[in-house]
Amino acid sequence: MDRRKFLSATGLGAVALGAASTSVGAAPKTAAPAAKGGPAKFKLGCQSAPFDDEHFAFFARYGVRNCSSSAKILDPGRIYPTVDELKTLTDMGDRHGVSVDMVDSVLLTSSHIDREKNPAIMLAQDPQRDRDIEAFQTLIRNCAAAGIPAVKYNMSILGVLRSGKVKGRGDSEYLAWNLAEAKPPTPLTRAGVVDADRFWERITYFLDRVAPVAKEYKVKIACHPQDPGVPPSGYQGVDRVLGTIDGLKKFITINENPYHGLNFCQGTVSEDLRDPGTEIFDVIRYFGNRKKIFNVHFRNIKGHRDNFAEVFPDEGDVNFLEAIKVYKEVGYDGMLMPDHVPEVPGKPEARLENFAFAYGYIRGLIQAADHLA
Image 1 (tube, rainbow, N blue to C red):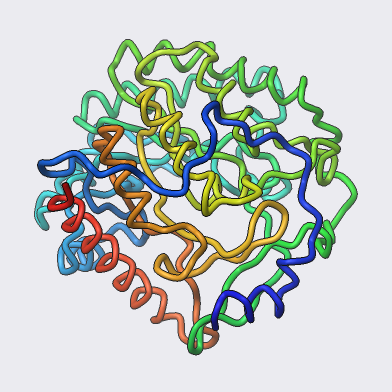
Image 2 (cartoon, rainbow, N blue to C red):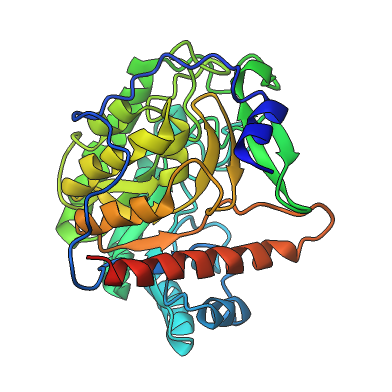
């Protein structure tokens, strides 16, 4: 499906754009300058599950040598992995030549708050909020002891919002978001009305207690943007303050230190832009030059803020070759990983096939970046 037909079929060309700011400083650029010589510092990664020997072998088969993973917590009443549980995970990776560079947390996931098992931090529920923050601090300390350099997390109430699916390439289908057609299941979540001030208070409360621990133990904490952004008036009563570029710029200044930054989902950031094909490069520069990109979800979209679909990496509106040149330009040294790969109805095994396609595509771009001058 070419871009013109896709836009016509999904209404992407007609939707009104949101009012959220997308300023990033310098004027948008449509391409990166010539990349610096020498090998790129970034590497192919992945975060797909399950995290067992078979899946680590799958990583290794396609040249994935670095990953973000999840440790198995043996005690169902505990909300953080022990050092031994983390080492069990890294040992599994070592057996297959795959380095565990990042882990996630049972807390602060990307789930909707009405389905979240541990909601206290985002609901500001004391005293459980402080107990959960202590568990997150323990995770940081345990990662330091186990030699895992980073933790990823979300500060989300609405989870990942999508309004439906559209037909994709071949027999695949793509998840899509069209704000004009979205129908929330309830007017409000159990969080009630959460305006910008309330959301920033909860973010600041968490960072004031966690960012200093990350700095002390030299473990990076990488926050995922809210996916996608919504108008300031909110969706289900929630103003997603981390769903704009200006919001992310403010976020990295709260309790700023070298270990507090972003799980930079390029797909989500593109969803927050009016013209991602031209604007994304300076967004990468803004956060990359400040060394606030700790991990990259390297996925593509067709469309723009308030109306888009998630597509294969080679067919979206963002030129990935230009993007990877910018990551090299800013000296990014973390993982580039696929995320939200398209699905095929009735064929669950196609998910792994589509990940394999994305690995090969990204690996080829990385090898090209090594030789571009």
